[in-house]
Length: 195
Image 1 (cartoon, rainbow, N blue to C red):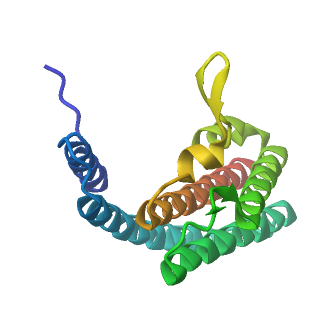
Image 2 (image 1 turned 180 degrees about the horizontal axis):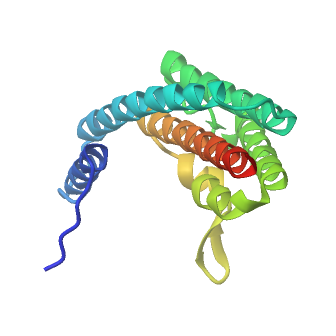
């Protein structure tokens, strides 16, 4: 028997994920249940994001000034602000901000462009983070078979109810904050090694 020990936050996600699978496998899709699960997941992610912001602020206080990090931080904040604007748009207008009449909106194109630029900047400034950026913030199209694939935005946001769009945007924001935390950890470790 294999025993895996999980921390409390991971246990919550596994339980909620299992609940989501159960709801999905119950035969008939129940939008109300799906919305409740998305709401629960969103509130958990919001709490995690707040904790990550506190950790990041604490690390920044210990950071020697670094112009490269300043550029990264500015770009990160812009990315997070844009994600929050999309979340607010979804909440207030009860829409999927990426589609109008099943066509990509300007917000979708901006999301894609900003995300690619952000990923490229992080990889350029911190080449050691290339694999982490790819794992956390992958924007590649989804390949199903040799000649069948889905565009990233269509696959992840197309036809999704508002709650799931908000969940995915909050999750993206969490990943950006996680990456910022990792970059800070790497910079602080470098500073310790140099002293």
